[in-house]
Amino acid sequence: MTTKKSINILLFLLALLPIVVGCGGIDGERCIMPAGTSLQTGDVVFRRGGGFTSHAVLLADRHGHYSHCGIVIDSAGVKMIVHSVPGEPDFEGDEDRVKMDRPEWFFSNQFANAGEICRPKDSLVAQKAADYALRAYHRHTLFDHDYDSNDTTKLYCTELVVRAYEAAGVRLTGEPTHEFHLPAVNTICWLPSDLRNSSYLETTIFF
Image (cartoon, rainbow, N blue to C red):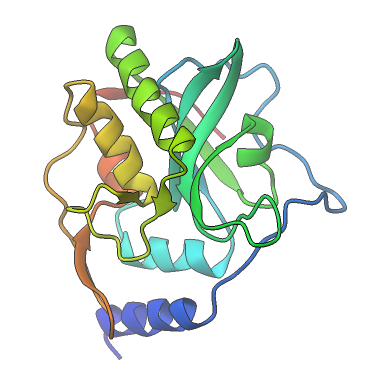
């Protein structure tokens, strides 16, 4: 069986069997981000998870190390992470959407086993990008299960960061190149490695 066919089968099964992860605490829960890690507005953050969805992304993104990403914003003086994510409801019936979470929750070992913080070159651009992400959160923008990079009414995780920086006048990466062919979805999208390899971002820490 070809790698491409294996990826398509796995993604199809995930579409049929979505994984719902609750927000309650679990035994042994901890944050994998080192204590004292510095976060700045506009930082792009990456994590690698151990669930089926994360494995599917990593299978598709053969040159990548991460399965999810978000952007740091300032909320009344507190650093938070805005990200578009499926399967992490805040309450029963919560739709998959753009969320705002504490860094300690984003990097909880419930969701992550590795992470990285990348900083943009220009703090003013970073602020504008964070403002876009925050507006997407306040609009209750839904997660894009079609991974349609041409539809900005819904956003998948990597697209949120790409669009945020585009709104600030910076292209972090080129056009989407990763193909997905599913029974109900045929699309080309961005994946976390496209951002991780951007020359506009510099790593401050990985863990």
